Length: 546
Length: 75
Image (cartoon, rainbow over all chains, first blue to last red; front, side, top):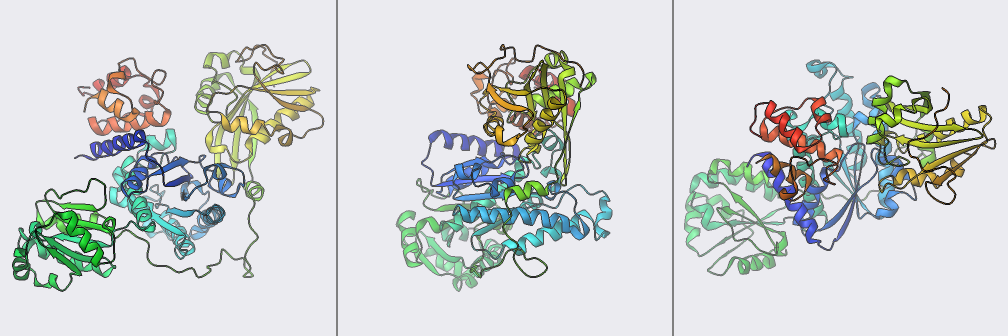
């Protein structure tokens, strides 16, 4: 099946699973420095198939640290059992010498995620970032110790060093997913340009499967016993066993136990003739004419496991268990491919045994642990710069597109381009920069400036600049301009669009956000009794130029 | 897979709901993210590439079909 159809089938099955409404056992929340929504169907399905039906919720875009540090934010509402955190160097600012900048930034996020996971009693699944694909020196990057690959690798290893020893952390590697898919199929420029989705569906499918496999193991449903179909596998003769034997040895060395089932004792003669080495690897066997379910129940009992921890490996159709009590791995018709097929089944996906050693957090130069970072400290450390400037008529179309896409932070439905053009003189473009990057024009304000009261009825910010207190700074700038103009009040007029919760939540704290004694700034819901403005969305009065 | 099947599959709607006039205004699940997933899926299914402008400007099944046909497919 081609990848597209295969992924299609997976997503279709996830939709059906969601419609069936299984009672969730886990609450999984995802925070990422990028749009991570495409991971949801694959992770959800992997957990469902592992007998761990889950609700999955995606947190605000690129607010890993903010949401982890907030004591009343998204995580408080989501109450996660599993917190999945993914951040990339590409959103972590300057790589710095030998990747130190990336490492510090990503480690700060990882520390915040650890703290949040502990606060909520959640298991942390941290996605190690892939090495960025963009290399300014191209192939020459390999010979540059300060290059992208070197810097990202250094940052990745710092993260691994910090997180790998913690028994309450699972690590998933996005680089492995990218490698498995292949660089050419792992990225699509439009996905990132238009939606900040860094990888293709294939990568997310792999990440979902890997994460699901580790979680299955964590919750005790991982594979512990590999049961070989003695009849089916023996039919391939010596060639099949020769291919399988090295992999079986490797799997057994990782702790997996091996068993064999068959419909009768006939297979013993074949195995003894074709692969006598196998006999020494088997931990158990059942060769009789009972149904598979009865055979597996006995094997599980003998090996101190439960049927859900068994995986049956054979050729052709394997009797499936309708209740999903055991897994099946069907090998193809070519024995030469069996080793690869068995390895790809991911039967040994599990975290290595770890013991809590009280691994300390990051320490300062004097060896002491730094005091916990607060949300205010973090936002202040971003060194956010907000500039508001008048909009040129030639920019109106661009502004209209920006407003149309900024649905989470908006005061109401997006006005059309011609409505914006009619009031261009009252518009302010909001440019945002911080130490992590320059976000360009990331917001728009529309202000009706009439008499002693100004009314802000357009205030849209794009997702990448949310969580940085940009909204407060932008509104303070309006208040400052109002004060200069001798205006005593600024109204912020909003309507509920069903999606603009971020803006509505901010407006609820408006008094604290814009404490300016000279100008009163207050929020008014459009059409409410407090709304003194005739309801004409899009503005009716065009003021003079700023 | 037909264009209708791909659109219905990506947008999680019944194929019977998909007409040439269908677009973000008439199909609630046609969000900006799903729009991109739809375009990327169509690229794979039909073996074509969309320019950034095409991705931005296509706003209905009909325009998707027109763009695909202009690229020599039998959408």
